[in-house]
Image (cartoon, rainbow, N blue to C red; front, side, top):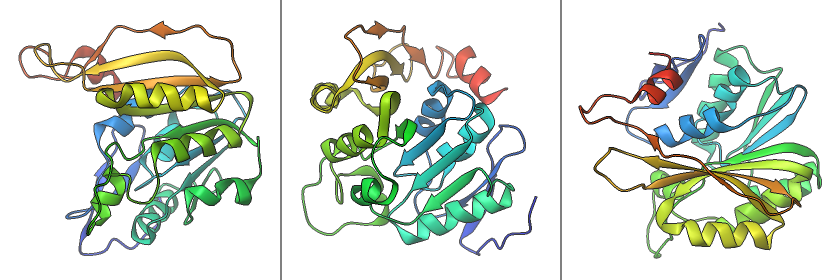
Amino acid sequence: MAEINIKPSERLDNLECGDLKIIQDKAGYTFTMDSVLLANRARANYGDRIIDLGTGSGVIPLLLSYKTTAKEIFGIEIQERLHDMASRSVLLNGLENRIKILNCDIKNAVKSFGKECFDMVVSNPPYMKFGGGEFSEKDICKREVLITLNEIIAVASQLLKFGGNFFIVYKAERLTDLMCALRENNLEPKRITPVQPTPKKQIDTVIIEAKKQAQAGLILEKPLLVFDENGEYSEEIKRIYKQ
């Protein structure tokens, strides 16, 4: 593992996946379980090219490097500080030959890479609409400050090859918006995994796999339970975290 400078405001977290480590800011944006669940659901073939739209601290590319046999994994992040952290995490893990983190706007991704050049696109995008006013680093990650859901999905569709897969995690309350945007951009929803926080709470998140220019046909999986009735991680979550 390379010697990488860790700033005073940062910490080094263990991803509990192989020997992977990630640099996180103590006070700023940090990745959530949603990204871990998304990376665990995404399936790639040997030699695939993958791109993560809005990679944040780079957790999804790092996890995919361990969980898949993809040849190349790219992450796009518009915020310079997050891009810097993600890039150092890649170097820290010695993965610079497989993972590239770019500091650019998702809206310019097609211009940078070209159309239909990726086998898989993944994204944990901002979930909430933005009402205007001042905003922070966390707001950019959580709200549609700089880009909307429709814009992200349009870019994903253009980047994907025919038959390529798009994986996205999103809030259940905006599922209608998500499904409409997918079909409008020739991405056919093929599998939905609902995520349920506890047995007594409503499903609040969904993970969707869509395929470019595919025929209709949807599989609705049983809900993925995060915490059991005793407040402990469910068996599925323990398996994901290898506990």
